[in-house]
Length: 160
Image (cartoon, rainbow, N blue to C red; front, top):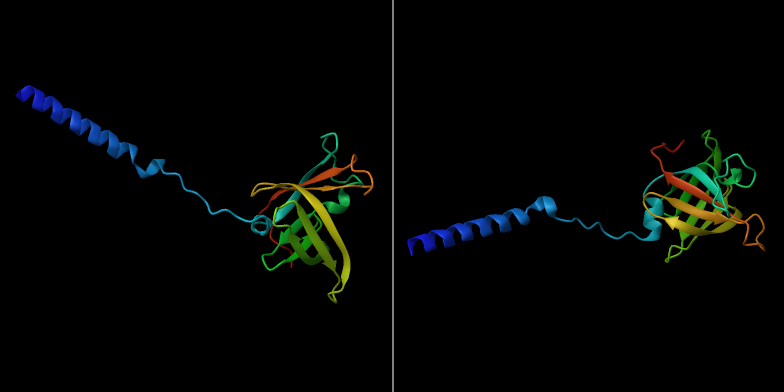
């Protein structure tokens, strides 16, 4: 009977140890708060790092079909943005929004007096913390020919 009690005690200790180890904080999953599409876009500066055509082929960033969309973009949480060319020269500034479903981004470019120069709405194909890609069409009436403008986060400081 004593041997049975010793075995039962040893089993209880082993099970207790197993439970304690399996509940270790090292195994806990940390769930990050869900960000809205606008919060994702405003969470980091973006740099154009690639472009692809409708065949999925990379297009050089100096190609006339994509060069106008290349640079650094800073989308601020107050709904304003600034963009710069890769040589840090100013490109444009104004206001921006992303649809609640994250499918489109709209920019309203403005001049120094705050007057609207143009409005551009693009389809978003990828919007994560690691990639922001939107699609442009050289001919708005032909959706079979397009270019995806791919941006990734950058540590590049916004030029003054």
